Length: 152
Image 1 (cartoon, rainbow, N blue to C red):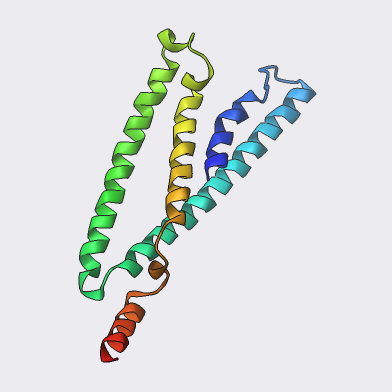
Image 2 (tube, rainbow, N blue to C red):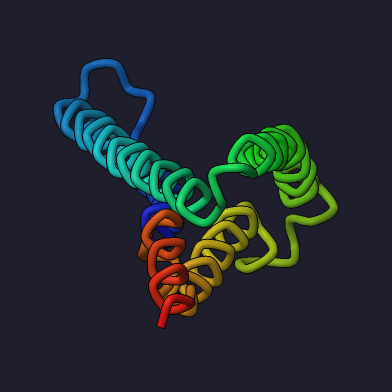
């Protein structure tokens, strides 16, 4: 997901003139829209897969008696992040677009928000590699294995 997020500001490098009847401009505008649609479609598909995977991991990691509490806490924290995230990103975006910040250059310009998002996705991907293997089993299977081990 990180590379897709990093590609979004790079789409702005496609040169589109405001001339109404320039044939090259029509091709450039068409290419711009194709790039925007493809990148945003890939981003939407990856977000759907990530969200579904997170819900499955949360449901699988809780015991049946605590499932309501765990789902409630996870949905509340996800809603909190969806509320705070755009506000923080908007403040950061406005800071990078402010007139007194234009002389700083590349990492601190409008790319900064996308770079931070990409770094968050990379850190999340690395953290997912360290999820213990017992999370790949359902909690009912783990309970059955514990009962079998206690009988021995």
